[in-house]
Image (tube, rainbow, N blue to C red; front, side):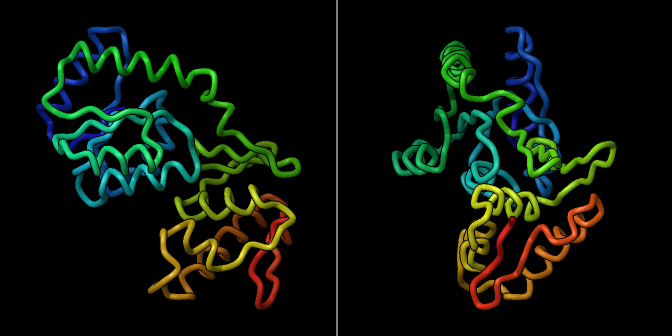
Length: 220
């Protein structure tokens, strides 16, 4: 998947990759980038830092909360701090523009070889009781009923599932979703929790998320 707002560069990258036997998809809806990535479920992402509506590093941070899809940062910003931050946020590699096409292809091949044992479609498929939670699709499914979750609902459910049977504080969830525990309307988290609860109820999990007054929430 190519995430780049320069149409010419996108087309050049796509042509280069397809000429070397890769299938490509170009992200067009930058406002909905997170959900577009999960829906496409790519094997690797080429991600520019300076993209509309959301900084590439922020998008990478959000993605890493729910997925280990390999990401190579492709950017015109040649600064060590950006490279260091990108790697610390979970990028698998970093290359600056203008780049040598052969070097880019070699790096793509190296990342795919290095990550193929750790990443596959099942790596993002989880179960909760007899419910199937597919992070890449952003869905919860039971029998023939499949329900789509929003980005915030995916992050909340992922976090609670990773801490199942343990109390998770509201501050932990706020930080997981918005990367800060400050300046967030307390009601915003409550709204997201309630929406997730309602979706779980639709497939038979009425009391999945319990509120522990003064402490937080627990998925049991």
